[in-house]
Image (cartoon, rainbow, N blue to C red; front, side):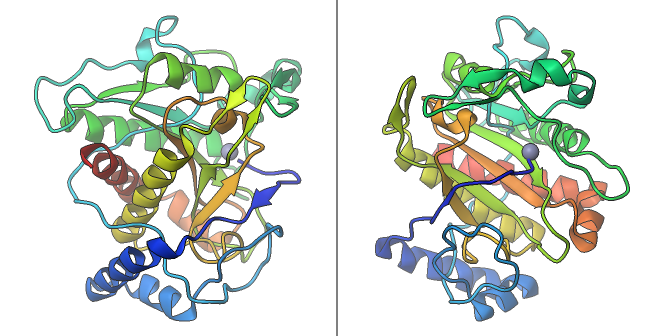
Length: 322
Ligand code: ZN
């Protein structure tokens, strides 16, 4: 997703989380994730508040998010908002007969839609996201060479679907290039809600300045306004987000964002309709910055996307297995 004037809220960093986080980092370093070790050493402050784009390095050490989860699990997709399964069966998958996630429903929300650019009037239509009105959807960003965020998110979603189905989960995508545009962000949320998803992950890649690198997971903040009430999902979504972030680091070896989140890889926002309108645990992940050459080299690599899909999926599996 590319932000325009984001209102980032400082990620919370409860003291109580520190210990497990530290343990997680230690394990990662031992595991030989050099990049992460370097990151951990340089630190990250507790967040970056408002300035979403503080370029440059993180400053205080603040270990990160989550606990590594068990490798092995599948993927999910996520998140966000998609169209309801009733109207669009193609996104749904039959539950696997067996597997640790049997009976669990995961919704993967591939951000944007490859054809959104042909439907500017429709995607610019304003929809109610509880706190305010905003565009139905956006075209998303792309690498400087033209690999689009929408293609990226669908590719990772498909890889995740395969992995998560192997774990026994029922997986639904909010869109699978099977509609002319969208869905709008409110519908993306509704799809997860109506599916009674146990976890939803919305997939994105950022469009920030060159030199800004790394991933971050976006968590819902407390919103109780209009049709939005996130109070019940804030805590489980944080748990989901921490597990996704921790596993993403572990599997991809990619460090958290150096330009937002203070090095934690976690950011809380209250302006995203896909989160505000969700009634089930949900997070977004910005897998990297498409406008940075080094991140773009990762995002355009199928091998790296497989790792990304695996990391996110394993975070979901960890969350669902408790
Ligand atoms: Zn996006």
